[in-house]
Amino acid sequence: MPVLHTLFAGDREFDAARMVPFMRDALGEVNVWHPKFKLITLNMNLGTVNTTDITAMTPQFQIDLAFRYDLGRRAAAGSSCTMATT
Image (cartoon, rainbow, N blue to C red; front, side, top):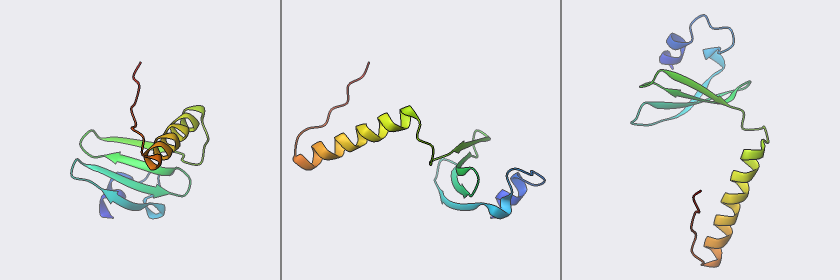
């Protein structure tokens, strides 16, 4: 993707040759896979680069995963799913 080579020219950490873009949307976000940083999200409108190590099990990730599992289990059982806000 020529855009990646332009954006990351000369950057030693973010080597564009190792990046694999796999999704983009109409709002200017591009999702990229990188062997070291895992998931990279480029927001072209804001000019930001965010990395997410999807292999790390953080406490918040575990809570989110449990919540999604519970929602899926309830939906499969036919009960309503509501989200409480605090």
